[in-house]
Length: 130
Length: 390
Image (tube, rainbow over all chains, first blue to last red):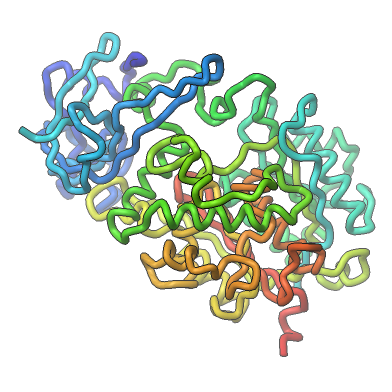
């Protein structure tokens, strides 16, 4: 896995993952919850956010399994499934799916967040809810 | 004033090495100008759409070609919607009297000898991302095929679209490509061939994915009046539209279920004064088989969710009710972003399709789709001036 590297914009997000919390942005004006990358609230176009901790529960929206063929050996490497997940609070995230057999994946499947090390930072990933 | 496409230039295409995007663009413009019976000196506008390769196109090309005193010059990029958007911008400029004769060009050279072709579109040549960009990289975001795969999987779950439907699109377009001398892939394909092709990003196999090509395509936009005096049959612009839905990535998003083709097609049909039933031939942007299925629905050729069965019905093939992607499209002919459907649309309207020419070609639809279903453009092309329609 490549390293996650924090910058000014993502610092509070990675502070959260280090604590085991998945941080999202809540609009100061209308309380709508948005993705960590939001620059304006999609509900009211407000520009002021508070970082809040999401529950970590989500459902599966979509997923793919990538096969990357080496140009030297011709062998294909199969990835773990990668998903779009919908947090209980509403925002969608792209994330790794772990402990999930892709042949058993289904839209709406309940998931929960876990945190994986990616260099010096931790990143969110999702597994079937226990 | 009405506006027309008067020239088309298509360079050598595919695994063509040793030329830069600027070389391909220059050659495409040269071919398009000659096709129209014009010279570089007749151009007073140039619009350029760069691809993904290093050393991509810039407006410096104008000076390199010796073009002087242009009244319109710009680099445009709406990804796969760009070809339609360039033609629209050129048409507005011609209609406003800002320019008389505008070349619109796309050129790219992403394929390098010995490189896995996915490399060019992977962003691997870019520097290590930081912040949320690096977070995206850690998830292993699976390239363009995977991102469209997310969309396709949603559609499959919602409407029962399946790999038989995908195969129908791929097989149909390969059949058309067998009659297209420009096509990179002309070996006939069966449904079994499709199913046996290797996975790229499940649910997509290799034969669900567009090709990658080096090359360039240019068209010349001018007034219909002027086009009538030039070498080729004019291709009249009846209507156009764009749609950039900006679907939010959150609960309730229609990502994967509809695209900007809904908005874009409605605008284009209204401007052209037609409905989807008036269209004789459709040239639909087809970066993936799924893109065709979704677009057919959004253009109103079938009900929402019925794009797969419609594609599998034979409607898109020779003798079908809606001959579609008659040159083989990006799946089987060549990948020049929106210039792939546009160039074939021009050829069909003119009646110059040879073995693949569709008998009835009065009104031809051209779509352009960019981003991950984020950007859409539509052109309605006519063989006759719109006001002369009987």
